[in-house]
Length: 216
Ligand SMILES: [Zn+2]
Image (cartoon, rainbow, N blue to C red):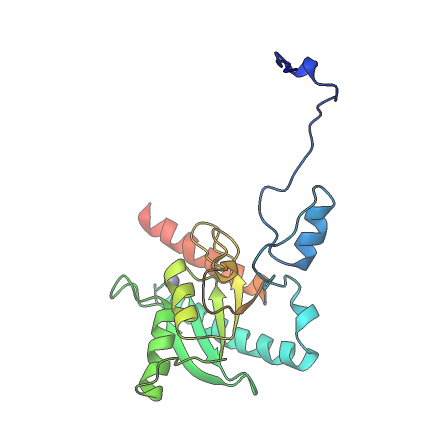
């Protein structure tokens, strides 16, 4: 026998509304929280984006990274005073976290002169004809990278990315996109964020305020 359903009242169950997560979880902390609303699991990919930086790094690594981020932010502040976009990229040795390459934003000279691109370019000049010029290096950024820069980090085989301030409109590592979680990519890196966030936010706000005053 075939019955026809004419309305929701024909069901023998009572439909009800539930709140479900809008976005896929970025890390194990997210996954646990999301699962409390709706059963979720990750298919075909690893959760690679620990939100809490202190859970995955040693105290000495965190201390050294903080020093390097403060160094990058000092440069960013000088860039801002000079009227340039205050975004700075550093490539660090994974063993010592010493700087092996630096890149500043030069979009005032040419549109693709993002800090990450310039930093990888500087590294490539010391590596010569090497296919993966950033193998296992740590990429430290004062601001979340765009999709172009995040893919450049994939192509050059960066091992870890640490950024300070999210970029809500174009950020490709957590804000707008989660490029590092794409299972189709043949290389993945870890991502940490929010290191030295208050200082980075202040520098960015001062820069955008100055831009606003100039345009009015
Ligand atoms: Zn970029």
